[in-house]
Image (tube, rainbow, N blue to C red; front, side, top):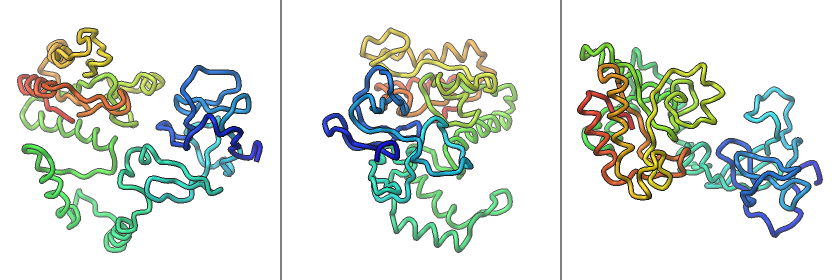
Length: 301
């Protein structure tokens, strides 16, 4: 196929194709330093004509320029269907959807029972504006979620996606403090390495410099503390065994900002995108909870 698509030149240096978290594709070649002629997708080198592996072609995306792609310097295979963990492009190639879309297709592609339920609901009621009405599916789903949630987390507010959910939580925290007469409480403290979404408010709370820096002038000022990551402790105090210094940094930051101004603290229960699934050490969130309660700071997780 030459420059018209992917061409396998040697079976020795590749394994099945998997999607990159940053959009686009990567052949699962070894991670290595940049070499002349390389094409990069995400952080992975795609072996090009100077190397063995797959050849990348910008002609794979057969559009007329009307679709704005995430990366304007590369082409994209056109996916026409999905089944289970696999995606299939228009030329019949199969890809492992290792990221489950953007983490939102965890039940797999092509689930007929789910598609049928969605179609039936769309035929019955496509949308119900919650400012004026409620609806039976929401009334049915809320108690089921509440039954699965820990402790006294027993109320649900439904939104369209992750970024909207996190920003709605910020607004709800602010509204809660206003109702209590704490009108100065508006700041949200977050952690470095965290990822909370791509809208401006969610991005401001996130702690990934590569994502934040280009848009820094637009972002609200969110104070950040170190993430809990004993293997690569940002505070250099753990030596592989967490001493909860990172948790106590929350109290230091609250005092520095002024407890009367801090509305909420937000953290991923398990740091995903920014730290490759960093599980918090024992006692971390208990310490966080105690600090939040001490200063009337809501905890968003």
